Structures are given as structure tokens and as C-alpha cells.
Length: 105
Image 1 (tube, rainbow, N blue to C red):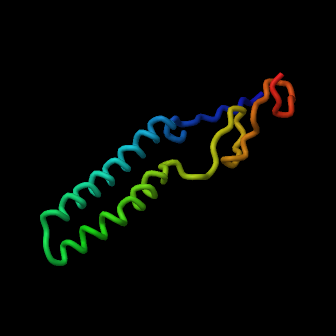
Image 2 (image 1 turned 90 degrees about the horizontal axis):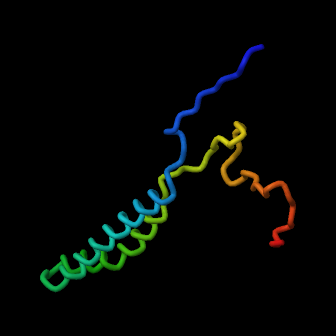
């Protein structure tokens, strides 16, 4: 009898949600720090630099949110605990052997 032994790599797993959230917070804070520098720079520059820093200060919050909400985990497939490949977002929920219809007992 032939035994099917398939090996999986830990590096194929998605990033830990807490680590991903921390990385997104760092990216957002960095972008908002740059915005703060642009706002402070408005007090010290003249000419067309006022326009450049003003536009940057207005546009950077939008970019900060977009950059922060872009996670490193890309959609695709992941290995289910039973060994079956399923598309992300379609993993069946484990109900503990009972169907309660979403109501607590």
C-alpha cells in the first residue's frame, strides 16, 4: 500500500493578522508623518513650493489610507486543514458538529 505524503512549507502560509496589522499601522503612520512635515513646511517656504506642499498635505491622507488598507496577503488558494485546496473566502465554517442556525443555545 502506497502512502501519499505531501509536504507543505510554512512559508506558503499567509502572514499573521497581528503582524500584518502592525505593518499597516507603520505604513499609515509614516505617510501621516510626511503629511505633518508638509504642513509644517508650509510655514517656511515661498513660491511654487507652497503649492507642492499644499497639494501633498491634501492628497497624502487618501494615499495613507489606501496604502494602509492594502494588505500583503494576496487572494488565491490556501490549504484547508483536511488537505483540500479551497478558494479563499469559501472555507466552510466549523460548527462543532451541531447546526444551530446561527442562534446561541
